[in-house]
Image (cartoon, rainbow, N blue to C red; front, top):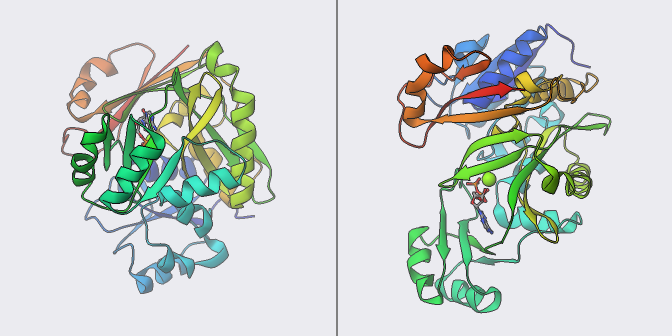
Length: 351
Ligand code: ADP
Ligand code: MG
């Protein structure tokens, strides 16, 4: 067990690292942030900060030596330099390498017994055209690596759009995935401890706009509730198969014939931010508990429900009005410039 007072290393200094550091501090841990940027927002709330490249093996080794356990809040990291951290790295490199490559991810999810949208790996226009012929339209191309918030994706609604979509994603290795008809989207946020114990939060319903999460709501409603048992079993099987330690998020499409896995994230997730006020234990504290070998906390709702709204780009300028709103819990990430599409904060309303 890694006891309070010890140091938790976090690779990545964005808002997830910031909220992990705050949860760690509540339990008496020190945190050390590792990030290549000059002043990442997580470093503002951490005990220590190392500024170095994610693939700087020597700097990573020094950082890991100064920490009692190391985690990551970001999956687009080179795996090989992190492998040297060994057992101190939680979750391990297996979760990272599977989650950062959409083709490896889909194969892995299928091998763990879950359903994904019909898909193919593609690496040339000819392969995109073959995928269109095999899977039909609409179809979405997603780069295998580095996609987030809908970036690195292009839709093919008619076969004639194949070349345009292939160009739009920069002619990179990709997956071609059938466009799914779904009633809603939801996620399962599961924590798995060092002994394989698991705990699952109530599933939020997730609404996206332009590929970016806008709101997460619990309870998710009856249509999603009926799919949660099957989805939870899938998430448990995926976490076990990865040997995952920490929080793992699985995103689903709620389809007429059952849940279909969209993607996984080997970490705390935007759709779990409501747990800070809405659940007995937050997803951030739960991750800290899991990686430190503490007992997992209760995932029960504190009240009837909660809604989390993201503050994206200029939305954050609404903060004066939001801080005046009774019962609204406002979170601002201290990220500086409110570029369009950038996640600047969120607000949670409980009850
Ligand atoms: P990101 O890494 O950007 O979150 P996702 O694969 O989750 O990428 O895609 C973002 C959003 O795009 C999804 O939440 C969903 O709304 C939509 N989407 C992605 N794939 C499909 C699909 N196969 N069919 C229908 N909608 C999709
Ligand atoms: Mg997603």
